[in-house]
Image (cartoon, rainbow, N blue to C red; front, side, top):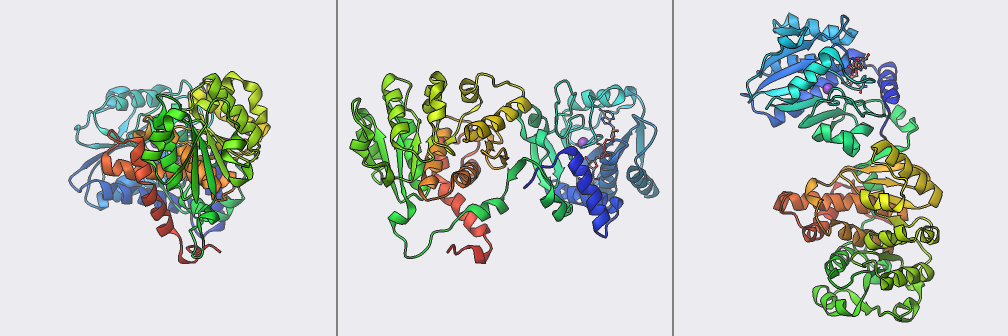
Length: 512
Ligand SMILES: NC(=O)C1=CN([C@@H]2O[C@H](COP(=O)(O)OP(=O)(O)OC[C@H]3O[C@@H](n4cnc5c(N)ncnc54)[C@H](O)[C@@H]3O)[C@@H](O)[C@H]2O)[C@@H](O)CC1
Ligand SMILES: [K+]
């Protein structure tokens, strides 16, 4: 789904109002109803809400939420942060509607007016939303500092107040929300690490903005959602054989790092590839043959030529190199060999990326549309000009993907996939439990196995990253985020495939 930038969101709003039989006040009611539906599903009727509202449309949402919660019998106390004189028209309408119910709205004009709520009440932050374009100051800044030190759960509406939807946010004082209920789709800053952390857990609530506007909007940024995955995923068909699903080859492992090879192999086998061959150093042979009898195993010794031990490259449809490979001269030799031997898109990860960082001349030898899967540190090593600023890093990621005609997969809380055409896809599956050793090796195995099955490289990237996160979510549900191991992600790949399959409309279950 497209991620629209602030101006486009505003235009989508206006377009919806102009082209559908809906007034802006009713669109606000839809947004508030979606929030109240979420809140009443997650909080019992004995929970009290403290709702902090601004004077623009984000505040209007808060006032409408207060009214709807009161109508459903919840205890609600509403506060108006009077940081300016005038209401937006829809905010004013909702203020009047709330008052006409006899509800008590406290007007806060200065910091001394803040009243400490009981710690078991839920604080709703509806002061600023997508209108934010400058750092908070005065009463709004005081509100943000005050609410952040409360022990209460903080739920932000659309955006944590103080955070711009996109664009630079350094130095912007921001509400630190535990949960953010955002409308229609993610805003860019909710997906980037330095700003997204203020949002806590994000839930996207559809409010039915006009689809034709959304589809016509021009933006390089997208999220990977179920609908997109349904278009990419191809169920298996009857009358096929292992040859139909391709032969994957992984070059990985070194003494003391065979675990990475074992994990990549396990994931490749679970990806659905017809055959998986692993090239490992002599000391890894017995390990791989024991842990994964389903895989073929070949010893790569220091003098071997890949063509001699693995046969012609045309035998394979996917190659992955890097997990546990080490950065020795032997590992470099294997990387050189792989780049000479295999001229189709491949997956490069971990030590393969570290070797490329040490020998940058190799970058231009990588076959176009190959998949590189750096984490932020590896990305910095690869491109020394990488900055820690999220937006600068995102721009560099897109520039390098275009310049080198590669698919760059920057692993993070919302992994970002930059394609050679300059578009960018953020993943929405996955959880912090996956921040554990071996998780990246699993992704490499999955991506290689999907390439082997004939998915286009961009399709393998999107489907692989989404599946990896989904398997991680299922694994976390079974084991907790803390106890999650990379091996648990592999165990849950099957369930993740089932989930995607079951989500398909019946006519898409049969791929012909
Ligand atoms: N199109 C949509 O997606 C919809 C948006 N709605 C709500 O409308 C919000 C946007 O409303 P508005 O455009 O009125 O903007 P906000 O309510 O976010 O902010 C109000 C005004 O505050 C001013 N402002 C900006 N930065 C400030 C700062 N740092 N300190 C003090 N004032 C500042 C701006 O002039 C801005 O227009 C969304 O976030 C959402 O909550 C919903 O009501 C309905 C549908
Ligand atoms: K807000």
